[in-house]
Length: 166
Image 1: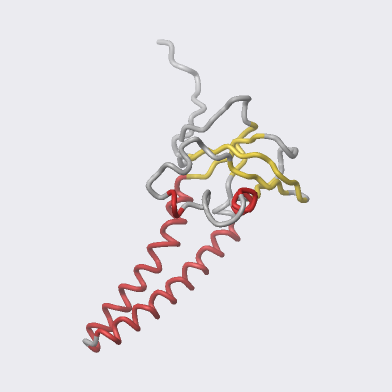
Image 2: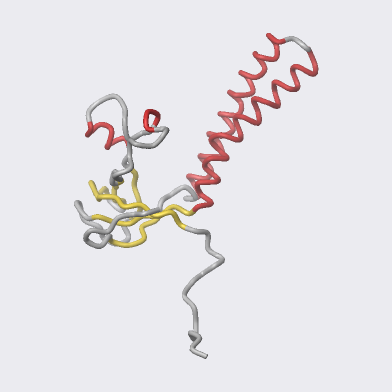
């Protein structure tokens, strides 16, 4: 049998979603990256709500999409790099941003309707529940950010002509 002696695939690691970005600035130990706009950008169903389009100049919109990574690879301004985000980070982020506020909103509304039976009080309780949920989400996101769980990872320098098909 021609089986390899060892495998470099780590199946215990979460899948990584890759993207390509340009290095636009270096500040100390960090490199600021600007993601490349793909050819499909602007043609999806949520194009009107996307951060790639908006009010202002093109430079202003691109600047709002910048993010930083640790510059352990001595990156230089103008380089193209491949960065990655673990799939579970997207799940944690979406849970934090959407599920927590929605759950507190519904819980507060249900409890108010059960206790008081008034639509006005239920609506007010739902608003209060939403505000509390947003506060909890902000706290959870701060903890995730402090631990570095939300940070994109530098994977490699992009090869000439390389594109992301993820």
